[in-house]
Length: 327
Image 1 (cartoon, rainbow, N blue to C red):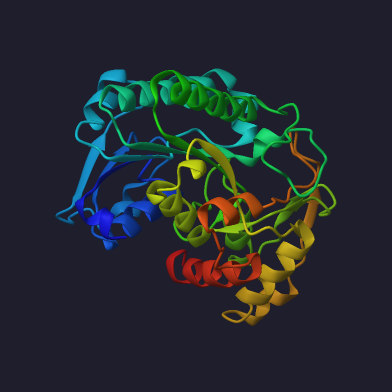
Image 2: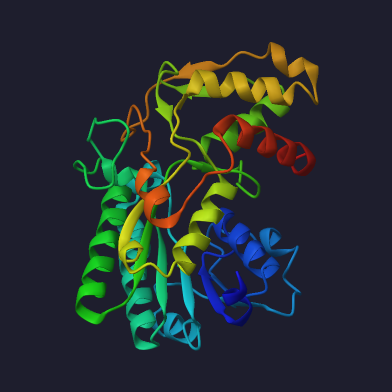
């Protein structure tokens, strides 16, 4: 990681869940870090541990503002582009804003990176790109039709990145995240991710509500595996590994009933009463894919990826963090 001590890394969406964890790790490794965030979904509290770090700079701006993107990319070596409006339900409710941020904002960042000759552009892609493809595990080259406006925007990101490499020579790597969870993930709000939402419910002795019968499954992926992939993508010197899209996951599958059982087991170590709480069941969520599991063979082969945490191991870490930070 010696290269990082002489590098400046721009993390867009750096006050968000994944972005703030990336900022912290990069600072720990000696990099200069610029965080660009408009705080529409990111939180200032996520930056509190390092906001006064001598190598940290915060730019409060919106990626829909092209001039702000140009300014942020000055003298930057690498970009970790995490800024986006996540959530399938949010995109169904408001497809226009999702498109403005995730497509127009993404294009602004690509153009700004090109203009300032950034070495490499690493961006958050999404497992939602697999759409209605039923094949398991998901292999990067086999995708279906998108099932939501959000999924469309993330696929368009991949198409734009590919064109920018071929047309302008901008090195890039897309990381298709599979249901990432861990420290700093917000349990509040209408579009909160399932794990922190369930943890909060259980900690307050309320039943978590599962959409559907609980048989839907996901490749839940702990944040430290995602950090590892971002670092590998940023620093690889293998020409074959660049200008690719990779799955970022553990390569397993946990259904929602199993997820609740694991969370209850881990939380009951802190509060035994939680073991007796049962889940409730609601309607299936529009745009949801029934099952998702990644093949991580491509990332292992080309980047040397070796995920450190299984879903169960990551959930134990996450529950401990939530217990100490949500109370």
